[in-house]
Length: 397
Image 1 (tube, rainbow, N blue to C red):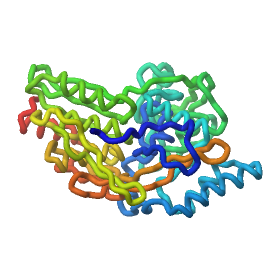
Image 2: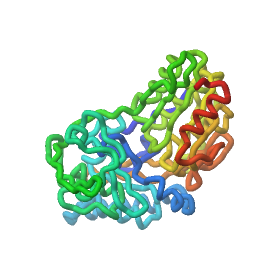
Image 3: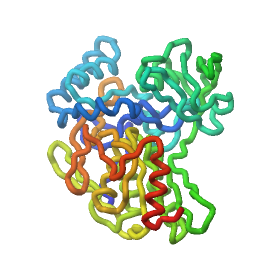
Image 4: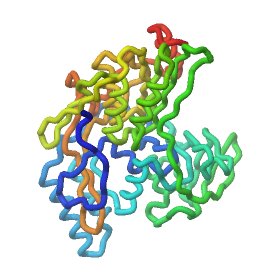
């Protein structure tokens, strides 16, 4: 069995209660731009790899966060800001605090929907911010925004040098109470030409899993691209594998996958494994296991593509397939987020997610702060190399 459900339920959370877990909390701040992009881009990966997250949060730190929230509410101050400051002091690298609306949006994103303009942003090494993806049919797409356009301002606020999470917050209008139908003005630049574009935020649906053939023959390999493990994505992967021609190999693309619901990652693993261990994890020192469902396709050639944006639940899946000898992994070292967060309700309706443990791959490797090194390291030509490897192991062309 895949283990307990990690479905988030913001309503009904009890203060301090251990109710649900989630791998990949960065989705919370990243979900609104258009396709659940990662908060930390590959360029930040070296810093992550040299600094490991703190161990499970000390109960005293949890109490400090709750006390800070209660005191702020009593004083009429921002509960979210006060609690976040307490989290920062605790040293919990992945701990975060969200107000009630942000957390509700987070749940919608994990369900596969979000309010935004339909674009993903990425910060380059020079700290400039550019559009990394445009959601087909979304407000940005209809306005003619293209991948590669520089994003200069959001509602007049310069974005160069800002973390992607802050850019996302501006696009969403998190601090202004912006909702579906509200306007946001983007300052853009393309090939030396600058202009502004007024977009109206909309409720959009994500397409977490896409499938296409890599060639025109009956034995051509099938590319399955997973951008995030939102609700139902694991079953989509399983169905795509079952629908693939018998002799066709699978290229599973997990690049820029920021994670999501761990149960969906386990379901995806079950498409390629005949039961057995997917990962172990601990919650306050108590060891638990995640197992694949039996009956997966264990014979079909499989190559997994990863990069510095492959995070959390996507790393859990990658580690399982690599450790179990089920796939050849190609690309660059993954991000390195292997911690477990648990949400709890604070005063004023805010929600804190604090680190309570870490997960390990089937052979006991820790991912947190280290990432996963692929079997074949490849950069710009990673997909071409992956297709060559897949063809070489009998997966078609």
